[in-house]
Length: 442
Image (tube, rainbow, N blue to C red; front, side, top):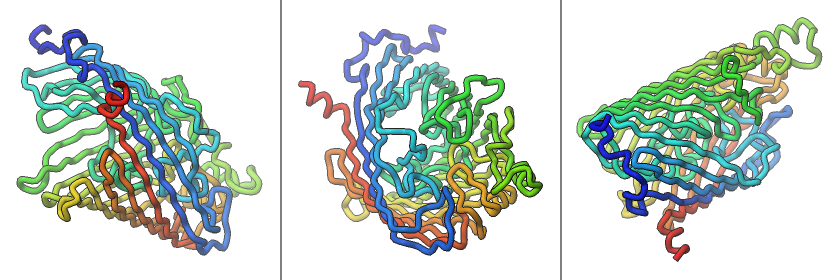
């Protein structure tokens, strides 16, 4: 064990002060608008057909402390305020990833993440690390285990993509920045879990066990892991498909165990007259049901200034969408260009398209007037939800940027009878790095 430690068990006192502590912050504000659109009918979970203007705000303070060279404590405080168009419902591919759809959530600050990170070296060879809010070590063993325990966000570690994962500097849509079919465990975007990752020279594998909400879109987490839990497994290969161009391929599998409702049971109960008015999936919930799915994620450098990403996902469609959004199949592709091509190195421009679909049972449930996690027009003339998004992120320097975004959505909420919708957005973003905090403390 003394050989493998490589000196990583050194006390914090032996490290430079700048390597021991981390503090930074960010502020992200998104304003979105849509004009009136065609809507012959609407339900309780419909996107409102009248014009809307809405602004969301997320502020985060990231902190960290290196107890030793191999042990880190991370704590983030966050405040999410404002709202999104139609308060976060009416679209499977919702237009603003910063929006929390539960109206019971206010702007009161909360602890978003708090976790322990433990690095276990498995080789003498060292590579350069990137210090940041999720990890502070400036160097890392090439072969290693990483263990994390605490409150964390699942998409911080799974289905990550350098082109389409950051709603603060890239795309904004839920099903562009994330795999829409990945119904990852979350309560207000976070969960409690244990994560183990193995890293080798050009590949990695990670597994996480996490808590699930007690009910769909619920604020309370179920701590009875025998009945409710989320299992996530991902394999990652860091190798490009084109010669002399970097890239990555990631394959994801997940299984959620929870008290879920059945679309087919809700339909049968309604058609037999046991449930009046409309199907009610909440009345069919049973413990220990399992919703599972798969995802595929590719990114590839095409030129010195252009990168491509592709995502695809599927989950079983018998049981209700539980924690993210109402998607059973999805496919997305997009590109991002660096502004270095026109002498604006810090600028970014991107374009993407995504198509979302749902299962036959899920479709029939909505046709009969049922309401789900985010959808429910009172009826449905089914069509795949099709979204095209483009953005330009204009760097203002000193961590500040303005983003201009446009999304066009055909068949919003899978409904051919509504839309299409055009949603322009303006994003203001500020990154406050630790050097800024250091200057203010002097």
